[in-house]
Image 1 (tube, rainbow, N blue to C red):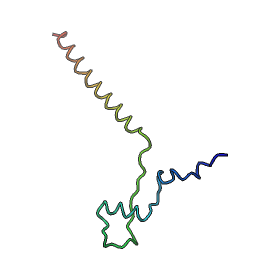
Image 2: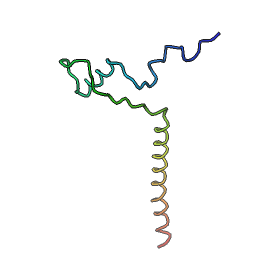
Image 3: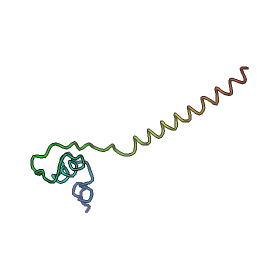
Image 4: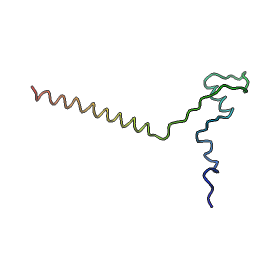
Amino acid sequence: MSVDRSLKTKSSLERHRNVLTRDERIKILTDQERFSEDDRPFGLPKVAHRKAPVGGRTKKKAAAAAEGAEAGAAATPAEGGAASPAAK
């Protein structure tokens, strides 16, 4: 019998969580220089925790668009240059 997917603890902390622990909030605030060692760890301000983009879809689309733009830019001057001498 297999273990249900929701009961596996290996990747439980890797997925996106909306609520951060106090330690995680303090670490983020310290990185942003909004918390110092003298401050109390109670009543901390809210910390935005944005969900990371899923997969590499945005990178692939950006790379494809860049390649398409480069190919289009390279083809246009070559065609225009070839047509000019023939017209003269």
